[in-house]
Structures are given as C-alpha cells and as structure tokens.
Image: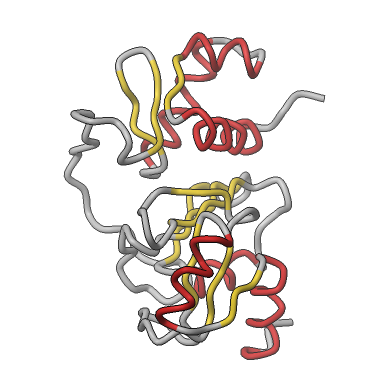
Length: 191
C-alpha cells in the first residue's frame, strides 16, 4: 500500500530532525518517490512554516541561514480558540481530512488532536529553540509559572532533558503526549 502524503511528510520532518538539512536527491532515495512528489511535499511543509526550502534541498524552519521564508501573509488563527498562532508555541496538524490546521499553543493543539486521524502529520514548536518537532516525541510541561495564552498552560520541548532543565526554574509537571492528553481530558472533560 502506498504511503500517504501526511505520513511521508512526517518522515521528512523526522529525517530533518536527525540530519538538519537534506537534498532533494537524498529524499528521493530515502522515500522512494519522484522528485516532483518530494517538491509537492516540501511545498506543503514550507507553506505550513515547518521547513525552509533551500536551493536543491530543505532544512528545518529557521535552520538555514539566508533562506528566510519571507512571504508576507495574514497571521494564522487557532482552530480551537481563534487566537493568533505565535511562532513560539505553534501546534500544526496536516490532516488528510481537514488539510493544514494550526493551534496557538500545545493546550489548543491537544484539544485539536482529539479530532485527528492517527496518520496525520502533527508537529509542535519546541518552546526553547523554536523548531518544529514531532508532537509524539515531544515532552510537555504543564503547570509551570510561565503564562501562555490558554489554560491550563502547556509548553512543549523537543526532549525530556530540556523540559527538566526548564522545570527546575519554572516548576510544573513533565508529561508524554498521551499523559498530557489524559491530563487535559480530566481537566476539561473532553469525551
């Protein structure tokens, strides 16, 4: 069965987290699809602000010097609460059913995640470094003294070690994605 665009795009982001930059040729070889398919996937990821296209390749958004995605556009609004989606706390879902959907913070993103399919591409912004990471592998900090736009405030980190360092200064409880979802369900009684 062929891979879906969302799962292929998720693989591209996962590869970029390891390799920082990749060429089109490397992606073609790794994913076993045509260069045109790679370009379409990269265009979708670039439009979502998740990657920066470079000459002949791609980098995680914000990683490639001199390759600013400087296209002026209206700010994205959160699909959950209608706030503007800030770069520092953005939560992005590339869904087969809904297309590109954004949330202003991990709190709203987790609420949004309840409506998503398991194979949707789901990314969250690392609070410390501002790069997009897989939502499934991120560590979530809830109850810290740092205020975010929504309550309960939840921050995302690329890894548990960074979350622990942040927790020492600002408090809170570190959770996995499934634990954060359960925490939110009990706090908000999401069915």
